[in-house]
Length: 562
Ligand code: DON
Image (tube, rainbow, N blue to C red; front, top):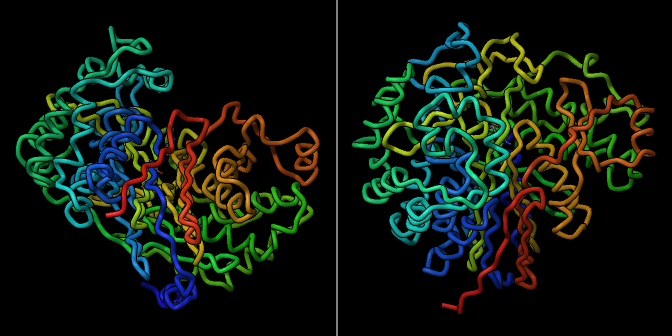
């Protein structure tokens, strides 16, 4: 760790954050997730005597079954953990997928078959999954229950079936062609080659058996033996480059979360690289604090948020997998640098991105999932999981029921190549064997002596800006529902446009933003799926909220004292 950052961390450790005030244990446990069946799986696991980490295993596994378009055993993600204690301990479990060992920087230089994007569709798009390793690791290292018990609700859902809802059908419509191109994906996830009817049942018996092998043998039950054989065989038969060594080499990595002081004795605990989100979040919040955002009128506030995001997102191009590139975290988070960034913001007009030094990388997809859990001891989890685009690579390894990710597309395919979103690549995020692609996933906590709150969402490149807007509502004293419901806007440096949900700005605000020099572009639909919770440590009250844009649920469970 670079000296400046450790100073940051050091200062925080001896801060007054966890001092004197008596802490009331959470009156309830709570799970907020993007699917009601996953929320129930978490609560069931807590009721069976599990802690928040067992519940996280249950929720993640249930989401893998119930939202096959969003995350899964064929994907990966990040788990931010809070271990309860007089001084709580935070951990970051990096279960990001890795590039196969045969991957190389120019592997997508040759275009695929007509209509196929090889970094997006099919076996070549898939990086080595991390989620199964994370489930085994969380259960073994932090859980109280056997892995088998925490995986049981997911197995049951896979075997008995899950009802098809409108969201599932919408996600299919985005990926229908790619799904039709893989017979195994079409067989399991489509019906007569089309989106299954609403309320019909999706049964996944092969996935139930794969979960069973994971339950029986832990990590090895996925990364070697029958599951590994099925995965490698199917990927190779379809032109992919996975080997058994890719699977046996895969490990989750525990990293130091990033930590930063916020106003009023609060601390932000968030995702380090290979997420680019935590750095962007710390930078934006630091700029906004220096610009005294809370005192500003609504229009100026929005303008300051946009300008902070523009600057924070620009720096993303410097980041990559910390195991393979040097991330200049100390420079990017240095107080002097953050002051300089804040000073470069003009309150009266937008800074054209073209006038700020050059571009950054952006490769993002369209789906993913987030959930959060707290138990009555105060252990908590904030986790964002992904297979990248809806239904990942739309490739299912025959016999395993495992739908593979297309996370390889999160790499930069070339330094100067633009992706479908008009975003350019970066050196630090080029493909290399065993490398983890840069991510935007930003599971985060904010904690003070009086409160713990948790934030996170899917949404590709818009994740950090959504988490920022949620945290600003919290810092502004707004009720928890508002953190999730608040209309959203986004700026990511390039392209130089201010994107906004249709209901975000009044016509007067739009006129004001145009006057300041912003280029406005409606997203024409709402986006994101934020899951949040708050524990008031003085009263013990726990509350949660699930984004009304999705179908998720935040539910509580009170257990008798043990
Ligand atoms: O890791 C990332 O940044 C992306 N794979 C996340 C994709 C995502 O959130 C799409 N969500 N709607």
